[in-house]
Length: 339
Image (cartoon, rainbow, N blue to C red):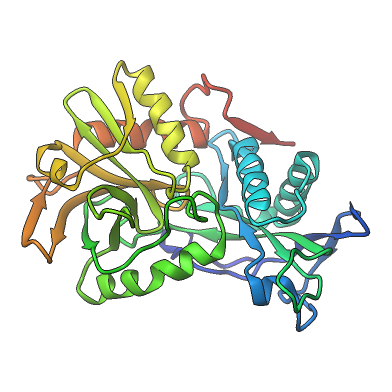
């Protein structure tokens, strides 16, 4: 009998029954393999260990009130992993293999999908790593694609409650024309120092600025930044921002609600003019922001005057979650039903 406190799950790793794997060797992908091991065996000179040939995805599966299991926008994750693979010169995972892997992993671990109404979901982690031995700096000739799953609660312990951010002026997450637009581990390693400093000071995450001029907003910790101003949904445009599938979905919902969407460079000074601010991504969906501190300049930007998320952020959050769980009409055709 599986005994998990579904309503109080952290956003962390819980051991499940199986993961699935496929190896790229001799120029082609092999058959999907099922494993119960939580470990990977690889060569000590694997390119992922030495030269960062690694990419991953984060996605979720939801159990609806009707009992159906829905995967949210898997094609977008497959495309983004393809883009990441090309960005760091790895073998591309075919979309049909990607879909087979995630659906197989879900079916094999179905007992770990949280029940409807608990606020939890099944998190999927597709991972692509270079396993071929390399001492010289060059792409590997062998790769491993694997998918593991784990049940999770909200990314921020506050859930859909306002959080505070700290502007990280003395740290850069990624450089223009660098790897910031790819979902590779190095970008996250580069964000750890600023993130830990923010956590130690009582903030939920660090807010990164552009590395070149320190004038424009980049990413909000591990998530995309967005703001609401009147009837506008505003989100930064930058070569170093990872395109968020959640952000893309929120923009579509905003347009459907009659809002104007602006994707453009966003100056730090504009923080004073926004009605609502939030961070969005697969893990958190939306984290409303109540305060942003800029310690170097002394500026403090405050939102959520009543202590609650703003009305537009709340509506967007509820609509997106409603579609993911099957409670709202899937007018965009975003969900894939796992049979």
